[in-house]
Length: 221
Image (cartoon, rainbow, N blue to C red; front, side, top):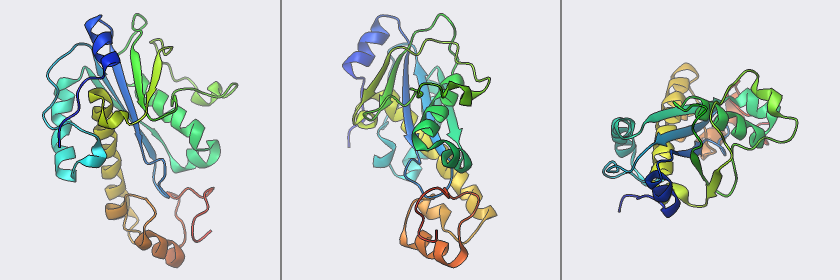
């Protein structure tokens, strides 16, 4: 299993002195728990951490072992969150935009930056429907966000997107393990909130919790 490299657009932007941001989400399809969006900033071409790849292709041990190398490689790392309650209130599409913008706001970017933003998947996760910007409250993103490129399969092709996928996956899995200890019975340490037979049986027996996305068609609903 080879590691990812730089996409042509990614390499070209870095060679021209532009910053590149990779963005990827984890938890979109889960029944319970928050949505996590990882964001990773790089400002120059440098040696990619050994073994970096799409988080889904890595074992838990390999993912967790990459967190420190990614932090050392990158010029900024952040995770943005949207809670289950926010997903219920806003819908998954707007919740993705909210979490993505929260992640971007956590990076060390300023007014002079116009980064190339590479997003895993077919959608611009940062885009907000017209009239929905007020949902973000006083959140400030100082850099320009006018160069966003969705990349289908990006977490398996782009170093910076793969790094974002690892950061988001490790962070969200740890949150779900903590919530499993606080609210046992649903197997969140194993299924991290996704729909499994174990999770389905627990919902039928125990009902949903505040961590469940109650607007969804859950088995017990």
